[in-house]
Image 1 (tube, rainbow, N blue to C red):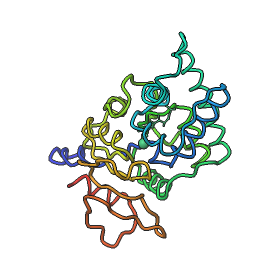
Image 2 (tube, rainbow, N blue to C red):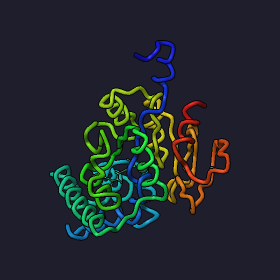
Image 3 (cartoon, rainbow, N blue to C red):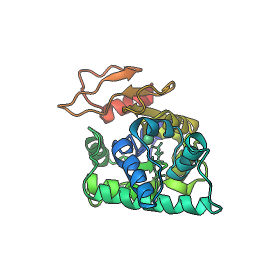
Length: 265
Ligand code: XBP
Ligand code: MG
């Protein structure tokens, strides 16, 4: 039996990594989700088209169905709403998911640098893994299967995704759900996010959070993040620390030793 005086250390030791998907595991937004939305709009005969800068504005709202409503409110007050708008949005979203998962199946989107390496290190050391994302569950499994490993979905103890909670990020609900399913305390986990909405969600659930920025999120407010990086890095692709630098002892990429050091700070 474990001596009682070690209980505190055992409880607060890093036990799990919880990952956002879009923008964090892979750069899925500009060349993935956006393209699939436009395909669904064209297929439905709609004159909606989301270019790269407009999509950046639309990313203020998480969730594809919610994003379409935001688009209509913000950019298309003129567009005549059908009586069955909810159903039309649901149909468009289903078509978008079909286009997006087909794009992933063609190997259209790779993982970001360091993601596979960190996941493999975590598995080798017996850390628990989870996903907490706003996107649709099929999108997560398609990305994991085609960009990581055909069995990669089974590496994650919990895949919390999409409409499983009613309030999407920046609400903390998806992280609360994940922690509850894993029966873990926020102090035992580290979250990985790429956006301000994601950080607010993880922070709201009490999680320390590592940010890896991307082109859409580099100017977001990441106050309160444990660490802000350009990317997780690989031995040959060194990371840059953009905020809250910590001593790395010559390390050029994010690994579990650094993760554990963040948990102590
Ligand atoms: C991701 C999203 C998602 C995707 C689209 O946010 O906002 O909505 O853009 O996914 P986060 P769906 O990375 O913060 O989880 O169309 O499947 O909703
Ligand atoms: Mg994200």
